[in-house]
Length: 238
Image 1 (tube, rainbow, N blue to C red):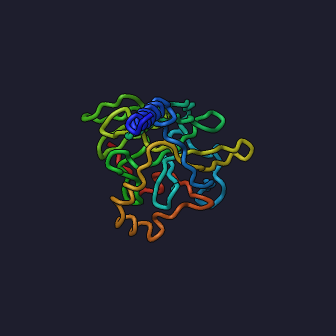
Image 2: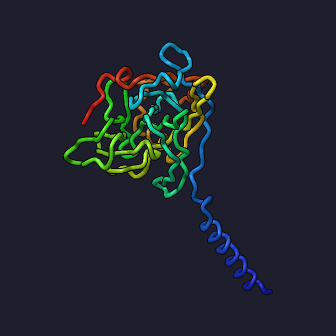
Image 3: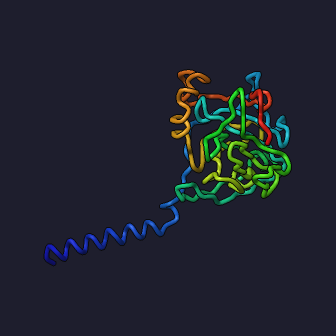
C-alpha cells in the first residue's frame, strides 16, 4: 500500500467510525448530571415529609445553585416515564414521578424560552390546576406549568414536555429520591437541557442584588421548600 492509498484508507476508516457513532442512540443522549445530595427541608429546617405536600400546589426550593429555583409538585396522579428531546436534539428518558403514587416531580423553574423565573417579588411562571385559559394561546391540556411571559406550556406529568408556546425544549428535570421509610425527599441531580449558564449570564447583576455573591454557589446539605405564594409576593395568573 503506497502513501496515497494509506491516506485514503485512514480517511475512510475515520468516516466509517463517525457514521457508526452517529447511528448509536447513546451518542446523542443527554445524561443525568450529579450535583450532590441535598435534603429538602421545611421552613423550620426539619426534613420535609412527602405526605405533608398538598396536591397540585406550587412549591419552590433552590437547586443545584443558590439562585436557581425549582418547582416541586405533587400532581395527585402517577407521572410515567417519558422520552424527551433537548433543543440540541439530545434524547433522554425522564424516569417519571417518585413517592408511593409516583406523583412527586421536580423541574427547574426557569422557563426554557426567555429564562423567566420566580423571584420573591414576582413570578410569571407557575403550575396551574385545571385548564389554562388564555385567548392568545388556547391550552392543549390541563394541570400544566404555564409561563405568562411567552405563554409556553409544559406538562409536568410527562417530564415538562412543551405543549404550546415558543419554548424549544422541556424544563430541565431535577432528580429527586423518596425514602419510603422516612418519607423524606432528596435532590440528587438534573436531567435534560440545562440553561444555567444562560441564566447567570442574563441575570448576573439582578442575581447579585437578590442573592448576593453566592448566587452561583452550589447548594450544600439542604434546601428549604416553600409554597410559591409564601415565597413570592405576586404570582401572576394569566
